[in-house]
Length: 460
Image (cartoon, rainbow, N blue to C red; front, side, top):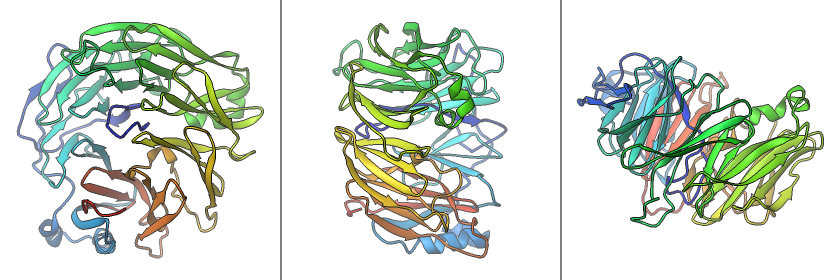
């Protein structure tokens, strides 16, 4: 997700969950009203994360070794709060939500909300469609039902206890696999103003276009909707000052030369008014190229973008009026993995190419540092993308690597290493997911997951 001042007011493309059968026990039953998608009571009374007493009665060699090693990490990490063990594969999934963790599994992917410091779910959600998407703001959870043959619907739930607030239809067309879908929670209008709050959804539109719809915070009523030309519609973000930016294509598209060669001159990004939906500016891509949005920062009014074409890759920033601020070519000749990370008015653009990692100043495009990363042995796990790295604090992020979880200083490139177990099978403890809340860190590996407390006030 793209980061603003870490206030959970900027959320980019919604993560997709494939929802299935019974899930976690909640003890409440809520209905979302006129849309028909529902939050159901869930059958089990436990989460997949086990406390110390439960683990003692259900030993698991890989999980218990992971617990022992991570339990010795020391500050800023605290004691082990919970853990899960399983066979190889991306079985358990976690997401950092305001005040806790969202947890679901591959076999039983209904999401449960575990408040910070507790393994007991406060509430859970499961839609009555095969697939679903979600988003979150500081006070609510947005569940998006994705029927196969009908338009999606969005249900707003209280983050505090899971009760239904409202439900609204999104457009008129189904959202199939690979189709554009994104949401942006709004929050930069003055308190008490008519425009404060609400959410804007991006859904498929006519050929070459996407549809933006603004829903009111109080009841989900549609305030406005409009179709815009915006590339593949991969991203929707808040630039502050009442401006949204939409557009771009998924990053993997930039690595497909045959697809790029077929791209015409086209509008790839669009800036629109958050209040009215009026078009404010557009950004054109030349034939044979495309762009992927790395993130938007409402505190500074900048969007950072990566482009690829016959001339190679470049990273550039636009301001909220659509004007170019800076442009750099980080690693000539390499396909890039990149992301924007911003907090409290400061921003860093992280870029990875082959065996190098670098950071650039979001404001100026100046390179802050560059360092080598090993090729052999493999440094990052398969499938790793920089867009997944979470903040540990206002100037450090956590990196999953094959032998350790590392705290990366965004200003200097210095790393602190927190070891993972190793054994004869090199992929046993590879982390594929990290999540950080105000009080917890979740480390999810190929054969187990551990949730640790964070020590308040300790330097990180």
